[in-house]
Every structure is written in structure tokens, then in C-alpha cells.
Image 1 (tube, rainbow, N blue to C red):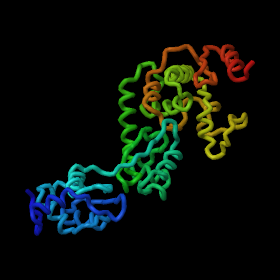
Image 2 (image 1 turned 180 degrees about the vertical axis):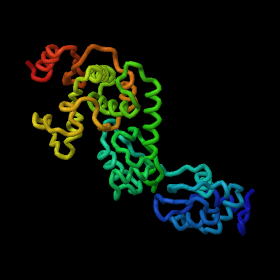
Image 3 (image 1 turned 90 degrees about the vertical axis):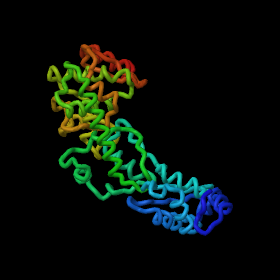
Image 4 (image 1 turned 180 degrees about the horizontal axis):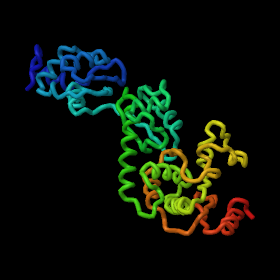
Length: 320
């Protein structure tokens, strides 16, 4: 039976199993690395746990687990007892939040999501894109497409740069894995080119079954030196000037991303590709198709000749 300093066995047992009084229904407790059991007890009281820090510290010591308390960000809720509190701290059961980065988003959208994420420290908000990449250890690298779309959990008060670094390393991992599975027929000659091509595939279709065929079309065009002629790259190149409607004059606006006027891949990715698009870029379907058009239901109609394509355009786009 535990004997907390100055408290008899029966009273100690009662105190250990009694819910702690809290200043609010939910308290945030931050424990810095290197904080000892005494400091943790005081931090808990400072956070709003309404008990004696001496008593709490005595329990931490007497339990034999005081040295096992892990640094982190914790949430203490109503009903927590001295026993459950220590158990939470020893297990490192931190209060986690989550932010989701969506396939096909560009870096502007990523930054907007991070700025709205709950309890995420906005260390990147005052930084330009170049400075963010430098802070992540990739100076001079364009940020577009460098982060893997996924849901990332984080401790309350974590830096948004830490989330970005995890997403960046995740993209490194998925890109390397896809590159290892590349087919000899792919026109992507480097992982960087594969990433750029995957970003275009991601923006061109949301149908998983169409991705490899879309990749096949672009692969064929790259092989014969035909312009990619893909609207998403043109839209990306227009930036803030794009008003939601792509016009003929936009297709004649010569930016580095205008794949109607320039052959080959654009200079950088245009969005975050997911795993399926990364694999499609390096494993394009074997097809004779050089064209595709949206059917209006999310899928695409693929054609091998311009005449076939024009017929498909009339059917699915012009409704003729």
C-alpha cells in the first residue's frame, strides 16, 4: 500500500483514486524536455489541477515512475485521477490534433490549411516560400509538389514547419518507391520529372482507373515531341490572374507552364500528387492514344487520332 508523504494508507488510496479538481473542464499541460517529476507536478498545478504540488510530486516519486514521464503536450480532462494522470504522462499519451493535405492541392492551399489548423504554431506564416524551403533544409527547391498529401497528426503547440517536414519526407519516400518500380517505357528520365508528370496526372483526372491511361497519353506525346497541351499547367502558370474560366487568350499567354506553346514538361510540379498518380507516371499504360476528353462523369474518352478526338469532343463537350 502506497504511503504518500504525510498521508496515511487509507487516505492515500482514496486520494489516488479520487478525480482531481480542475480549474476548467479541459486543461492543457505542456512538459518540456528535461523537466523532472517535481517540475511536472508544479506544471500540472499551474495548468489548473487543483491539488498540492507537493502531494502530486510525492506520488510521482513513490510510484517509481517519476523518471519515466515523457515530455509533450497533454490534455487533462474531467475525471482524471492522480493514477490516470501519471499513467498518461508515462505512456506519452499526448493531446493530438490533425491536419489533412489533399491530393491535387497546390502549395498556396497547403499553407492556407496549415494556417487554419487547430493549435498548430504558425512558424511559417511570416516566411516566403523560398524561406520555408530553406528552413526545411531544401534551399533553392521549389515547394510545389514536394509534400505528400495525407492526414498528419501533431501535438498541440507543434510547429507547422514540423508538419511540413514530415510531409516532405513522406513525399521523398513515396517518390523513391515509385521510381524503383518504373517501367523502361516511361519518358520520365529522373525522379524529378516523374514528380512533375505525376502532378499533372493528378490534376487531369480523379478517376483511379484513368490515371495510367492519362499517363500513357502524356508518355506518347513526350516520346514523339508533341506538346502536352494540358489545361492545368496553363492555369497554374496564370496564378492569381486565373478567374475560373480558361479562355483562348490564356492559351496564348506564354508562361513557363504553358504546355500548348512549350514542348516537354513544365519546370516544376503544379500540385501534390498522390501515390496512384506517382505510380501512373512511371508505369504508363501501353496505348496508342494521343488525346483524351472528359466525358462529364469524371471519366475520360481516349482517342488515337485527331479525328476521333474531335468526334469525342463534339459528343461529350459540345453535345453534338
